[in-house]
Length: 213
Image (cartoon, rainbow, N blue to C red; front, side):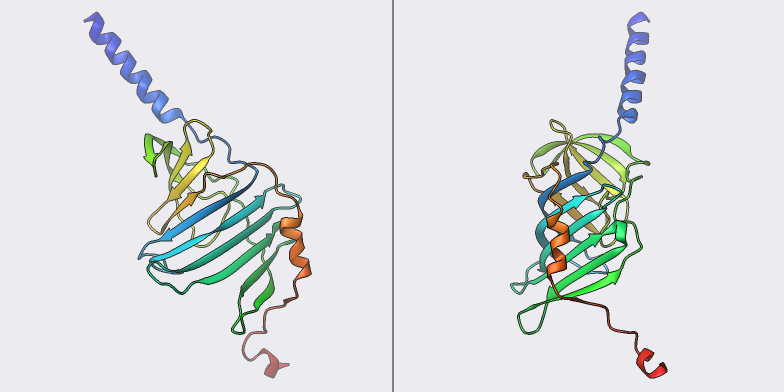
């Protein structure tokens, strides 16, 4: 009986510890290579493959983000380039895309939406340890991306057991995989502010606006 009680107590403690673990704070700034693979459920680009390099600095006085992707359908040879640069504190976003003449086109738009989800892990539930593309990770469900982009849905978040750095995130829409070069060092401001050197046009007026004035 004594052994049975000890075993039961150990089980209770183990379950409590299992559920109590929470993700480490997401790095407030970082730079990294990453890939994104979407599923057939994605409404932005179904079954597409993205590869690129990202930078961000979530300092509330700046809220900078820079997302660069080369993407296309998963098995396609033709790829498209685009970049989004966020000046969250100024509520601005700059969209840079391939143009038909081979030159990049930049559009500056108002962007009042949050760039960072500071309650990203408020509903996190610890599931246990699992391998994520060959790297041992703590898995948490019910987590949202910290750096907000594209389609947003809660899903599974994977945190490196040994470094506590992010490894990846997946849900029914996509899987985001951070590169092994993920660095939590703060990127220089120029990685975000140098977009001012690009001739970024305002968005075209809505259809019918010119006729109505």
